[in-house]
Length: 340
Image (tube, rainbow, N blue to C red; front, side, top):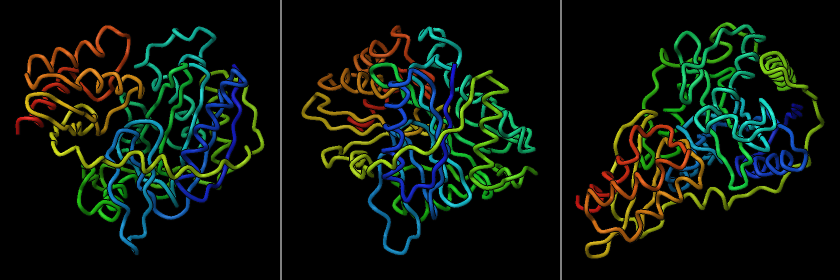
């Protein structure tokens, strides 16, 4: 399998969202993997696809908000961080032509191997303990997420701490979202690190991209080509705006689960659920989340029925909701939101 690697310096999060769609189109057209390593200016709070986007930060907050195309926990980006977007024509493209060779919950395990190789070439001993984090000496170094499009094209994203610690995510969230719309766990300095702090080399963007090329060639045996940058896509501010909560979601429930926080926003009318939005630190194909939400709309506000609908919408379809121990939990949350 071939892998084309690009690097770029983008002027803001809205262009990053458009870049991910551009990479997916490239992967489809070429039937090969395409990876872009990019940087953003300033301080950026990178939220996952399923987070409820808070109101714009106040003037002078000094932080921008990005909405990733993939799910997962909040992460820091901007100066001192590196963003990765790996686009695949199908979820198993890193190992062969059979799209079904990897189960959905194996996608991150395979894709992260090249990143681990890159860390090694930069002098950092990193590991992937599972789920959505890469660590060095058990301290968070990078966060991962993925999205699978309806046609099977797959995007894996990573936020990597290069010169600044991953612990900055808590400070970024305080400035970007003072009302606490998005629950963000406090990450203490001793719980997070960076390439530099872990004793590694952190050169310029070209050197980091070269390390990625070595990592993916060495760990996955890919035929890697360093390519010139893609034409700059037009920024897509509508992607961020689409993540804001609609006013009719006046019911809310939250619970902690495997990756962090799972939230449900709901609306009700008499004894039925009229609308549902699943939010939080969830990693899944957006189509799976949409199917789950659709199954719960119109349901009677009955715990057993809500649990049944949630379970049947996901279980048995070969899908995955990373971060959710039991799909029935979503039904429980909808019931709590609508009766609380």
